[in-house]
Amino acid sequence: MTTALLGGKAYREAVAAALADGWRFAGLHATAAADGPVVHALLVCPAGETRIESVAAHEGTVPTIVDLAPAAGWDEREAHDLYGVGFDGHEPLRPLVDHDVPLERFATPVRGPDPYQVAVGPIHAGVIESGHFRFHVVGDRILHVDVRLFYKHRGLERAAEGLPLADGLRVASRACAACWVTNAVAYAHACEELLGLTPTPELARARTILLELERVWNTLNDIGAVCAGVGLAAGNTRFAALVDDARRLNARLTGHRFLFGSVAVGGSALDLDAHAVADARETLARIRAESSRAWRELLFNGSFMDRMPDIGVVDAEAARTLGVVGPAARAAGLAEDARTTSPRLAYDGFAPAALRRQAGDVQARLEQRALELLPCLDILDRLLAEPVRPAAARPGGTGSAIGVGRVESARGVTSCVVERDGDRIGRLRLRTGSYANWPAVAHAAAHNLLPDFPLINKSFELCYACADR
Image 1 (cartoon, helix red, strand yellow):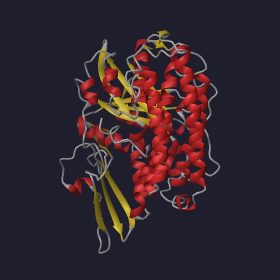
Image 2 (cartoon, rainbow, N blue to C red):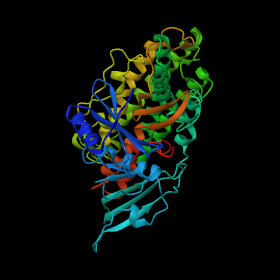
Image 3 (cartoon, one colour):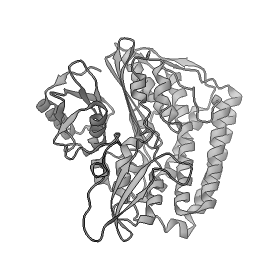
Image 4 (cartoon, rainbow, N blue to C red):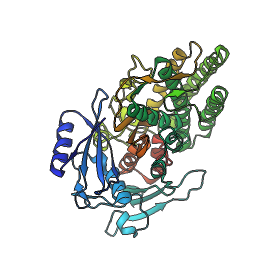
């Protein structure tokens, strides 16, 4: 992929025209250049094709597109904090990654005799990463939530700069253990686009197997998390046991419970003989049967199910405006799933599962995950019908200056953009499904009761580490 630098007005017009033609905003990042930062906006069409519109920061400033694509809000704030880019028209441009600012610059001002603030985190009671939620409430009713993450920002994208393309995978993939395969495959796809490589059918099959193995344990974990949010310890423990079964299977197949080391740029070392695939299919069939029984028990638990309807609503219009992705978007009626447009993976004929009740509330997000678990297991059963052998990509293109990889994670589509500097990384940008969805958590919490926030948060079950990259 190549991209030409546009002037500020032309940049906004190009983005506006693309959005009017049905393209969607998929990410924005800044890149350091000799003449000043350059801003790149990633767009994707319904068929999965991507394009990038780029603009140089004239005197350090570019026009904002947050009024055209509100989902760009976090991206522009991050580009400002890390690269000093100003976005004309984005007011107030609140800090995102930079925490060394007065509270009033970060938090939304709320005035009056009745509202008060409840600060939660960044340190939590459980084994959880750092995240701060500042609730503006009247009584128990939430008016607004300010979300502050990035407490453990590791600078992975900067650390990758200058590395050989193959070595960048260990940096990008370690952004998050729960999303290791997704991040690794997205990075590998971006690099293979740079190098003009195309996955063979066997390589596509191996990577799809790994992605769906990751999706199985994440989906089971997310269902259990909602049980924890309600306080149903029995449900949480039961699904936690299934998560452990799935992770132990991962360890038997790849040597690691989180599938570390199973993806490479230009190939895969995954090697499963007849005994290994038979063991996998048997274990997954057992997980299917047990998870179905556990799900039926949840459905007939009235006190559990009654806690979820009409709480934490993100309807279709809000989901589209905020750029929500993954099960949370599909639970609101947006039938979008990157697996339907993944020519580099083995998802032939895939169609996203759709609920009858697409209310966009906690109940819908829970039911969407349960619904999506079954086709995930079906895909694995089909792809594990025969042994898997190590495979490599083959030459299939001319290469490019910028490569883009887009992969559907358990929480939504993850985009990886790699800019090439010879045979090394000039710029790496990783925008995960969790990063895309965090603003929706704050939206979902508004107008609900403060005690409901843990449940609303668990119904998204987003990764903190994906933001702290």
